[in-house]
Length: 383
Image 1 (tube, rainbow, N blue to C red):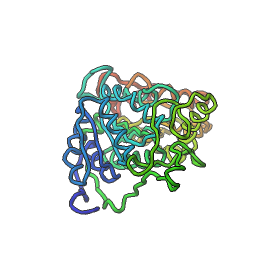
Image 2 (image 1 turned 90 degrees about the vertical axis):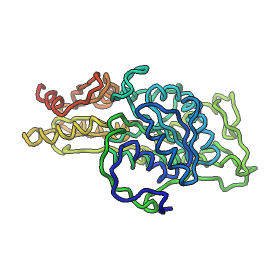
Image 3 (image 1 turned 45 degrees about the vertical axis):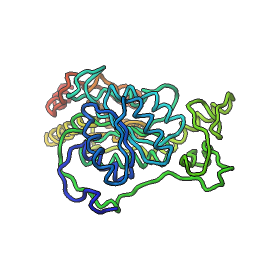
Image 4 (image 1 turned 30 degrees about the vertical axis):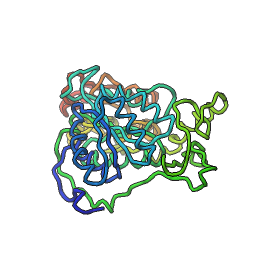
């Protein structure tokens, strides 16, 4: 596996290139997508790299078809992914919902850009935070990971595939134009040293297989199409056999199971970074590219004896509310500043979680430019 088909060693890579390479490490062997700035380099890289490892690349006619192709490939047993940006992400939402209710593992990369609509394709924003959580309709769980560097984009891509396979669910890797296009040095490990999780397959005879029987973990085993197991897949509410049901009891029970399988895995899914929080009276909360400016601002303020720290969610959804509540409850914490490149999408969630324990403010920028460290410094000093 670690032969010439894989890049290893010290490399200078963009975030998009790192995502593409990480997908191969994770076992991805199918990509379907449609070119869209600023995610196109992921498709370009995989169009060359996937055939080298025995995989398949399809450029589809649009984003709707590409999401459908990814679901079909996953049902057939392949680890599958797609990549897009805001407008394409919107088009994928109906089939993302299908993937949620049918419990089809796959990875969707959204490299955010300025919007709404066509917006400004080559400029950066973080406007898809709520679309990632609520873009498709109905009550459903979702896992959304948000890296802030090229190296983290690599490792979070692998984690996205592992979580998707472990919990039989679509997982969204939410990056942004800055992370996608900046280039940084990173070390690519030997593929044999990377932990990769593969979906659990049924052990029982095909005649006794129930494709949506969750069991103790609430996560059903998954047989590949063409592997001797016949089962039904639908976007309708269904019972453990996979066939549609009108039973209100089954509908409620299955919906709760979908939600519960992610809720009970909180400690496995949710990750965050803390910096200087032991004595912090003020906290900057930032994610993605903005976290890089936040770290610099916090370090500068620390040198000026300002008791300030950083909380960076690496998992945006499920939101790391349990951890943030514990921090907000500390008697010396008086304020959280949420810095983001939108009108305050994650600010609303932070207010909900921590607003009763401390003051919560927002620092937003909507002109497609980065929030610079000096803006965070100014926002802290002005309070």
